[in-house]
Length: 456
Length: 119
Image (tube, rainbow over all chains, first blue to last red; front, side):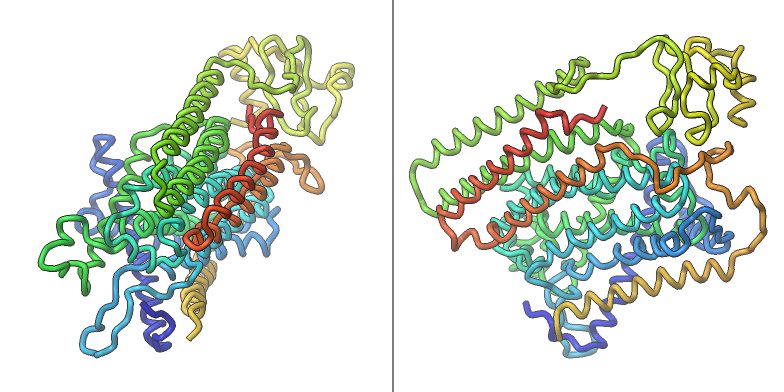
């Protein structure tokens, strides 16, 4: 297929259609998520606004539009306003290279055009680049809010996204190896015989896990862990600025699903069986749009299903899984699949031995990871020469390290006025201004006191 | 037409939508001033004072960023190799495996030194 032949009007129309498609899919995804999660929790979910509650997401959006546009006092104004715009802009960009279908004739005209806005020789690389740019929205939002929880949420979120982006990038290399191209339309065309999910199942599995981590969705939604971080990076955002982050999250979800469809599930090609009917008539014209949207929604359903099923991971578990599990497996898989391709190309008969060797290496790696995780689960120390901080009895200053830490059993917590207050715990004891409280006596008797200090 | 132009068109559309909705809510929304409302939100308690210059941060995040750069460069090197795999032959495969082993040494060192521990 050729790209770059469309007239400017056609490009504008296609861009507008993609925009509308994304916004409508987002509204439907929010509705579907609330209904499906509702069903999973034995309740109906929103069902009042419009037929089956379909207009609920739209009503929520309108309500957000009519809310007060708060700008808290301590924010960095320019960056604070820029962050939601970045989040709401970059999320649309990746869809420019997603193929919705093959070439079609536009109704009532003779113009033929591909159901894809544009294609680049480096299309998938472009998608990865845009996904990284989305991190700026999150990081800048957290940083500019001038508040504790958004800052922690923003930094956490960016660390999470970049960690899982490595595994994602590595999992795609096998696809490029098979397709011999990074252009999305070419990758779809190369999958006419067999979808890459079958020969490259390991890549597909790694991609699917990392796409959930990349989009900050449950069970990897740590930046929004409300039990520890309130709302995460968007705590200080209200009104439409908050809606932009919300929209960005859902469109990112749609984008990674579309990329998974394109790279592993044959893109717009009809499923096996249907594609054989009548000489492939279901692979031409407007039919592919149906297959593409169907596969996309299958992924979206899995996202919602995950959210309804799995509890959130702890941050250290999550990072360990990414860095110690996904990345080494992805690296070894790349080596394995390269060697495999090399053997297929050269036609050497010693194929079997190489498969045995590579399989053994892969198995060793899996065993190693299992042993490592069992050792961690038993609470054994990781092989490192760091000395763990030992719990000493006596009073500790919670702000001595620069950020608040709770008391360990047997320690006494000094009540100070935060990092700007008296720095050394000894001084506060001498002056007698700080109340000393042991970690054990946290009970009903202490409730009134702590309520006064914490202000509820 | 340059194939990058449609991307700019879609980006402009997205940016216009984002700017218009943020500006729109600013114009439409009510404004009722309240001192407490403009404070940083910390579940109702007095907000923690912020250190001048950003304060201190766990060094883990810095390590993650550094490791990310190492591995991102690695995958950037692997991508052209994968695309041109058919033309390069066995030599490229051996070279690539050597390169990955080199990066893996850094990774193993990081693992061993506890750079991947998060507790």
